[in-house]
Length: 393
Ligand SMILES: *Cc1c(COP(=O)(O)O)cnc(C)c1O
Image (cartoon, rainbow, N blue to C red; front, side, top):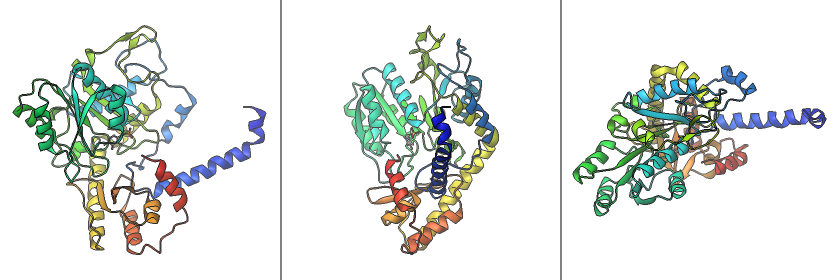
């Protein structure tokens, strides 16, 4: 490194140490945004000394070898099975996050049904409108029920009056604010009733995809329930220090749009060029550590903690609520210092907490204490937290 760096090593170290301490403190109290933190990826640290690039289709052996495709394939197979994808007819890759998976699903839908209209509910993630804009797709926003679930009657009527164009349904499997899950069985019923010959369903399972298979009753959200593609975030319920995700789609559809690229001796089936090689290792390690059983237990614990939080909030007279089996609990937006301390996501006068793995009854109890006596809690960090809050999504 340059001598300049040498002279300043002390300062550089100090700057990074301060930043790390600040991150740790904020992270411990963050209840409003969905990020599991019960992980330890020390075993992955040596891989920071090498460049891994997963450029290209993970299923195709290309010329370039510095990739982690073999790990990526295991991760994909694990999740494809949980998402009940048809055994010999699925494809996917590890993305940069849920948004990229949604972009991919919509892209595929557009290529398959060129003159389609996308229907998505008002409570969809803010990135959906952006993706539709990138893809220049026609779209119609559908009303949402108070729970956040799509209004099926509005969906039915809107598709009915646009019967001459094939519909693409962008279904939310856990909305950002209330964790409402659109029911693919009901959506398929609408297609059936209206005798729609061609349609496409993409499931935005960014939030709930990784734990929905373990819920009882199991939500109707996956390939067996009629999805043609599905996007999951890796850094939410699974937990990852680096944002990532998984997109899965029916292989027969992907094959129809794949283009071969001579430069890398591979297929250009993914959204980006170079792709993160470290995140497949992270997701692989999480899969090995938790397995199906561990994921199921984490889901169960989060659902139970959400039930506990709901009861505690109600017990002090707060009008809290949650959707059935959700790990998100909503309540009227509290004073700004409490919102800042706990990084509570808020919209339209309502705040929520998401009971992600690593949160405990102790966190819930402390939040409840703050809500009971707003003047007694620690606000020393609230300015920093408020800043952080503003920039999060
Ligand atoms: C988080 C989220 C997204 C975006 O996923 P990223 O991984 O942040 O890109 C999209 N949709 C829903 C419902 C989400 O909760």
